[in-house]
Amino acid sequence: MDLKDIKAIIDLMKKNSIAEFELEKQDFKIRLKRGNIAGPVAYEDVPVLQQYAAPAPVAALPAASAASADAEIKSPMIGTLYRSPSPEAAAYVEVGTEVGPDTVVCIIEAMKVMNEIKAETRGIITAIVAENSKPVEFGQALFKIRPL
Image (cartoon, rainbow, N blue to C red):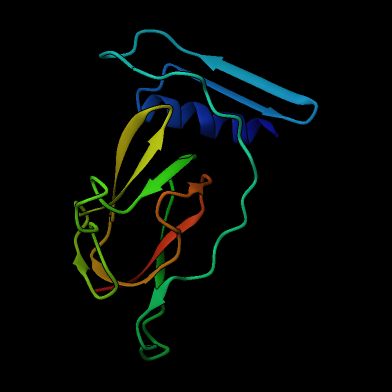
C-alpha cells in the first residue's frame, strides 16, 4: 500500500464520517483514527480486508451504437453492497432504469454504517456488475451506465 492509497482512505473516512479504519494483510497492518466526527458512529469489530475478484456482469442490455460507450458507476469505498434498502424491498435500480445524478443506485455498508451510493450522472443502467450482499473494493465497477 502506498501513500496515494492511504490518502484515498483518509478522504473516504472524512467524506463518510468514519472515525476509525483498520486494514490487515499478511505482514502489513494499518490503523487510522480521527476525531471531531459529527454525530455518533456505531460499529463493532472492523472487518479484515480481503481481495475479491470482480464478478461477471449479472445482466446487460443489447449493445447500442459504438458512438455511445457505456460508463461505470464505481464504488467509492470498501464494504458490502446491497441493491435494495431491505431484503424484502425491490432493488433501487434494474437494467433499463433511467437515473439522474441524485438517484440512489445501491447501499454500501462499511463498518456498520449504511452509505447511499448515487449515480452522480444522468443515464440508463445497462448492466449490473457487482453482486448483491457481496464485498466490493474501492474503485470496483458496480453498474454500467449509458450516459444521456
